[in-house]
Amino acid sequence: MDKFVIRGGNPLLGTIRVSGAKNAALPAMAAALLTDEPVILENIPQVRDIETTRKLLSAMGAEVELGYGRAQHRTTISCRQIASPEASYELVKTMRASTLVLGPLVARCGRARVSLPGGCAIGARPIDLHIRGLERLGATINQEHGYVEAVARRLKGAEIRFDKVTVTGTEDLLMAASLAEGETLMSNCAREPEVVDLADLLNKMGARIEGAGTPTIRIQGVERLHGAKHRIIPDRIEAATFLIAAVLTSGDLNVSGCEPGHLGALLEQLSSMGVKTARSQESVRVIGDSPLRAADVVTEEYPGFPTDVQAQYMALATQVQGTSTITENIFENRFMHAQELGRMGANIKIEGSRAIVRGKSPLSGAAVLASDLRASASLVLAALVADGETIIDRVYHIDRGYERIEEKLRAVGAQIRRIGEILPKKATAPAV
Ligand code: EPZ
Image (tube, rainbow, N blue to C red; front, side):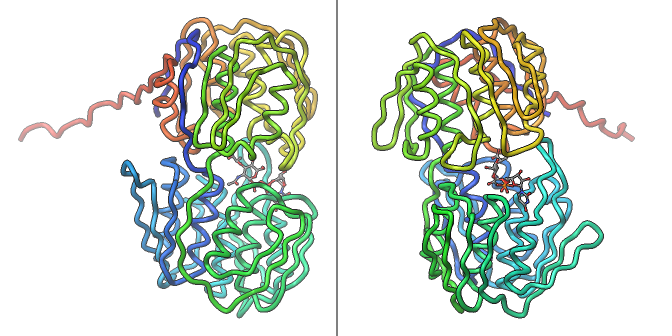
């Protein structure tokens, strides 16, 4: 397993370009299951979860071309026919977002068999709301042997009200309802930009969706959907990660190719701390040399402060004079990074869903362990300001959602390199 070796102390100076949003690309690739015509997606990030999704769709019988040439970062997915509408445990256990194929498969093939994702490092993460929504659309659901099976000759439009705001739940049912008979009205929907991006793609494919980005979405089901070409939105979480890195290292960094309108809550939080930023149409610049004030943060569904930026913010809070309270409202176990930050010298006390961070604590480099995608990002950020060398193990977590992060950071002055596991040489059979 690869590791990162990072030596702290360098300010980040220059420009980093963000990649396409992983959490927009995953549902968009699943949407290709809804048509027998090719779907072309551009600005696809070169991250592990995209490769996992390519394997998942190919296993069903889809043809998936995936290219990351200079101009490309593009995938063409053709699901002329779906040989087996299944998502195996082997794949789902490595990426829970595989459940995004559930809705499209039932809508396209009339049946789906998808492994239940099980929990993950940050929480239980059930998919009961996905399942209940499909039942509302007329699917018959059976759960056994760790799989959920959904069957419906043809889904029928219905009213669906989500008990909790769920991003992939909204996306799953948006795709299912697109091919249902009649109208579906969904309320208490997720409002994330990734939901809006999916609705934009589905409408390009011939769906009739109104209200994406608001809590209420109306879908007029259609008989069939056709192919389309679509450019995935920039990754707002990657952008947020680099902006925080700039503040932490007292750098002067321009994060380009992003959508400043998707970063409202973070930019508001940074300005309440005294951070100077400048925005253009598609970039945000952070000049990290101003004295910072501690500021509390509460994670909420979009447009509130994103739970996916909570771990990175915690790393920043350790370097700010004063006490910052971080309240995690979305997931029940998303403070795994706190212990590792503590091993680097941070002063963090966990009380239920709150983390009390007392700064400023000088951090020292250490050997640390990544536990999940955003916790890994938090450790990279802390290592950029720690005194001495940090070794981060299990960086495959970070490779799931950040494209070549070590190259992007090195290009703006960070001292970071990847070391591959030195695998024992394969024993060669003795010469006979
Ligand atoms: C999406 O996960 C993102 N993943 C997550 O990003 C993100 O943290 C999360 O939304 C919240 O913003 C993708 O888009 C692929 P939820 P998702 O359903 O859809 C509960 C990252 O780092 N819930 O919005 O799985 C759930 O347990 C990842 O890129 C149910 O109870 O999250 C949680 O407490 C991590 N029943 C809350 O709702 C359900 O059926 C929000 O979860 C579904 C969800």
